Image 1 (tube, rainbow, N blue to C red):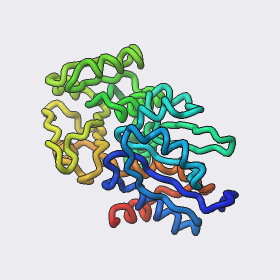
Image 2 (tube, rainbow, N blue to C red):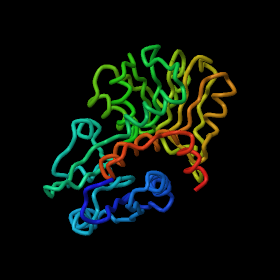
Image 3 (cartoon, helix red, strand yellow):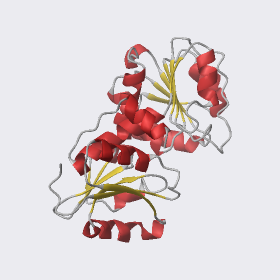
Image 4 (cartoon, rainbow, N blue to C red):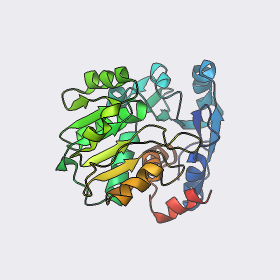
Length: 279
């Protein structure tokens, strides 16, 4: 399936990284398509990041996924950066090219949109404003993607307002920054509501937002996928909203990288989802 002289290796790089479901996902695809290759977790400290990345191609690695806390730092190491990674200010996918250069891309935004379109096919980005909570690297990818597909206005709040203001500066007039305590006003009239924070993740406090003004016609999604259905999504669903969990974003963002590294575009289907959930 590939033209690599050695069995191709790929890693997910972060710290910590043991919790990542990416090895289970890519391992499933490798078995499904009969590809000789390996995908492993690699816990790297910030101080070792560049030296490890420069060495990996010589060890047989053809690429890597990048997760917290290295998504921004790899842009200072990569030789070639895609336009969307530059816009977002972070990369989640690295390709070790045959010419020796490290290429950085960001597929998080595309994965986010693909997840919504798969699980909420009637969602219309242009139907109204989006309310986005959080202003980290994931929020940057989500905001760039929402703007690209035609969301007319993005209401943004972060517990540290300065980070939200920085996104407003980077992404322009469609971004309207509001205080975290104004969540109720943000959600009022919003067609799309997104949690990009880690609140609600197993081991973290719940995301507590007043949902009294949430429209039953709204789509609500959470990037957290452990647990699969957060308390935030449970409460939104109880109010009649369409909810989409975050696991599909993980699956869809992974597919372009897998294709680049192993030469096969994988299907993101129910069997893939079940394989990751059972890992």
